[in-house]
Image (cartoon, rainbow, N blue to C red; front, side, top):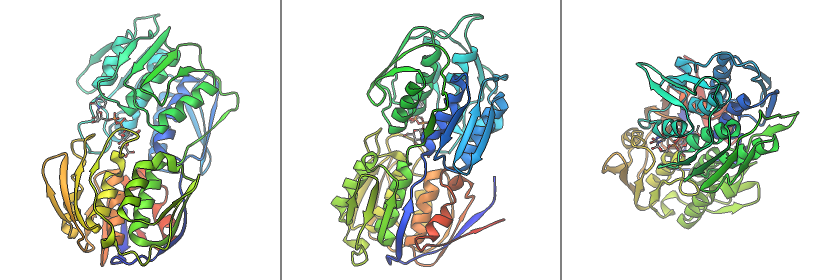
Length: 434
Ligand code: EPZ
């Protein structure tokens, strides 16, 4: 974990950023697709892969299982998981990368056993895995909870069996891992109340193109007919654009840019954010693969109207954009109620924003009320999770004066060389190597 910091000079509310910024491949699309390599009898290739820490951690996890991973170029990888020997997900990496849980299904379905610690990741909640464990039990596996890890296995010589599974919560990674387990299980698996995020559709489309029998991805009911190992036969997965990164740049542009074009994105994945910002008064133009903030210089942030945000499973307001949009709402005029319904500790970051000058009433671990506009002052900040880290960059750029953001490993987990990309549109942000 690097101790690097970001040093940012605020624009004090002026809209000086300009130009074009290209959206990278989606972290939350490539992590499940990398995990799917375990389902293949041949090598798999990926492109438009973001050059971020979480991708490196996932490749390390796969290597420790016995797979061969190779970074072919900055944004392309290949993985050969023919010879997975170990059943153990590396303890240290799994504690830091919640997405390690996605590997459980493929490893269990192919080899009949898997061992892993209680997963970690960002400190945005307890991050339970009860939905995963219930699903695998329904598929005929035995789950043993040991002191520091879980051991899941199917009876010797047996395979996972397809089952009818109802998710009491629309869990994204549980949907992904169980869908992948179903690809090699015996018979049919039906997942009801599945998550419907675009990343799940992208994963399913790729697997189907390589021989999987999956229908219904992107709807509440996914059906998987189990079969043989998949074959990529040279098919290359092209990572879909990161909708959370695109949304974060859009929010930054609304507050700090005169003209900004956000390129290589999928506006359709962000309708709720785009509509909310348009209604608030942000001058936005939407194309099929770009979003533009236009002639925004003369529009004061205080002229933006406040609005309420309730995070919700897709296509509702993404919890991963709750911190960034809260920064926007500290600058809009009026009272905004933020209701974070997905995670119980995802408002913690706001304490540092209050220190910068925001007017916020915290009601409980899920709800707060922001009253704007308030001027923000540069401060020293410690980001608790990937998305709050990006929100701090936005707050620091809106603020008057200098800010320091510590432990930026979190930001590097989800955003590729963010300081260089923001500098190209005029942001004064430097990485201080410790
Ligand atoms: C995925 O996490 C994303 N991560 C998260 O993005 C995102 O915030 C989240 O979905 C919600 O959209 C990846 O895709 C790698 P969940 P995931 O399971 O799957 C509860 C980022 O910054 N739950 O959909 O872990 C859980 O506690 C990250 O990119 C159970 O109760 O989220 C939460 O309250 C942060 N039991 C709710 O479901 C379970 O077994 C939704 O979580 C599983 C989850």
